Image (cartoon, rainbow, N blue to C red; front, side, top):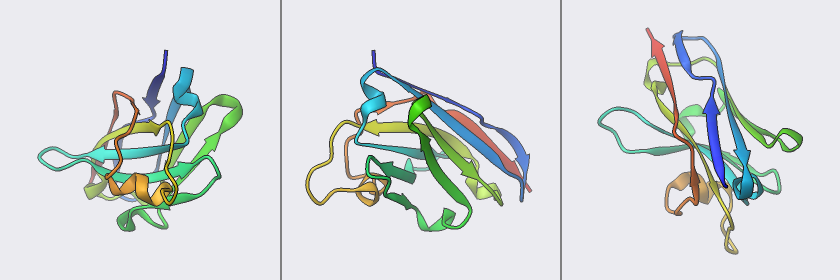
Length: 130
């Protein structure tokens, strides 16, 4: 059974760091691309960072230089290292995977939100206080 399970969320002060983890199992572990999305109360879900099977990564502009997405293939685990956190980073963070990418699609396409992701976790809450 394909499954994504996030962990690592919590409450931190502005400027702090958190590392989110996403354990993939079943077919989700073989996703062509895996990504982190987030959704704050009253706002639309947005792509934060993505990594495809070739190791290509993409980030939304507001997190570039602060967040880093990595994957440990041996552990089937996707990570999101978040540094210099800001109150506007507060949101529910979701791990997602897509089984296949078409020609011309890559990690940047994934975080654009235009693709339908095949697998979703239940989310982990990140709260950043000022």
